[in-house]
Length: 261
Image (cartoon, rainbow, N blue to C red):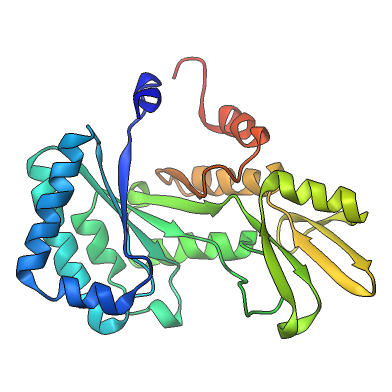
């Protein structure tokens, strides 16, 4: 934390629910427990000299979400009264998440972070973690819901998946950016630019098995920084720290930071 503050940056604490809907429902459906959680979050902000709290509650059912909305409202009051920020992570608008009250979240929180990744995931057919159309449509859908652009932070992946096999039976593993380059070199995969996704795409056969990687690198990062600028969003968030390589910071320097900032 000391190093982050020395750079003049803010530090938010992340509060997550480990994607456990049953536990989340049992906690948030009780007023007394919500009150205790709000008090604990405020105390953490004071104890660790944080600038605010980021709430990352995932895989919530519809019955849990209505209590989650109440929790955000109550937590926002507690934190704002003491000068702290509140941000919340939200899934991309979709049929399965249509009961998430994203517009109301934006009204009580300082920023919402849209998790624009896992377009393809473990159990799906092979594909990009977050293609340009998928990412841009997530932003457009949030704006269409009435959320102000300057309250939106675009969440992006610093990871990708190595797919081996074809169709829905394909298996996959998570790779860092440097890990991706290592696989391409070790297995002699061919790399081409994929216009449809806006990404570099690596593929090749290894022992008669098709290996595929929709790469996360400078190319994919540039289209995301372009989206932030085009739609006047607040900025970028990423999952997860340690998965990036040094080129990421060069892109950020070029796209967002100037000598006067």
